[in-house]
Length: 319
Image 1 (tube, rainbow, N blue to C red):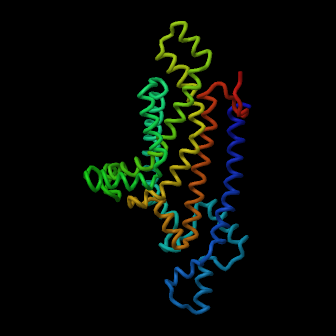
Image 2: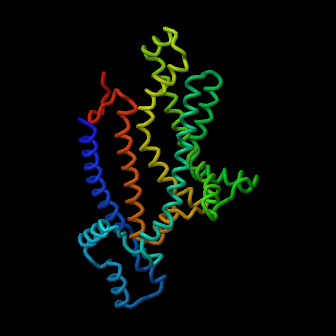
Image 3: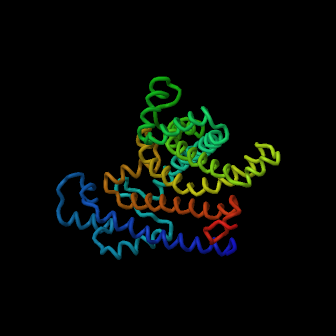
């Protein structure tokens, strides 16, 4: 199956999956206990007429199928509805907060890729005490949840050493990058350890294969063998973890943003769940699912390019 056919099939599968996810996301919110109208009233008693007006304004009185169909129609026109908590369009809230979250996730992803690949490669190639040190260090990183890492990094580098700000986003791009450094590191720490161990294991598997041993016995420089054969072949295994890495970053950003006071969609999601802000929670959840699926699509398209043993549409190694 060629690239175009495979890409079109995967896009169609992605659209169908996203449609199913939208139904689950929309339905799950209305199965949760509580009513957003009670939050709008702030605990005050209201007449039946007032309750009916609020339910009509936010379409809370319509049947489920009607609400879902109306929501899908709005999504197709780029309309995520109106926030119950902030009394403004959800699209405007997302436009204000999404850039900070995307930048945070991007910075964390860079740290994960650089730290994980470098440590994994060094551990596999050097061995001995260096490998043991990396294994111990990455084991500690994997065993440290993001919210614990956030508290530790904030306490040491922000409150004690005063090297980084303890929270917020600052003014301007430079200040934003500076404020997001600690949150990005807290978000990336666990995944750096995981990717380093995956990279190390994949490279050790390739190092033990016959073609690598033969190349070394013929006098081919070890650095060339590592770069052209071992590391490249191991990247196929590493690439398959891309979806897991991004999904973990998206989930953990809720905790990290709350710990550091980053005004992104993670913090917005936490607040919206607390206040039963249905439209905002649904929009953010759908965006996160869409981002996760898009990353998986990119991984599927890149995998055969990185690992020639894999062909489009087969999902299997050849040869």
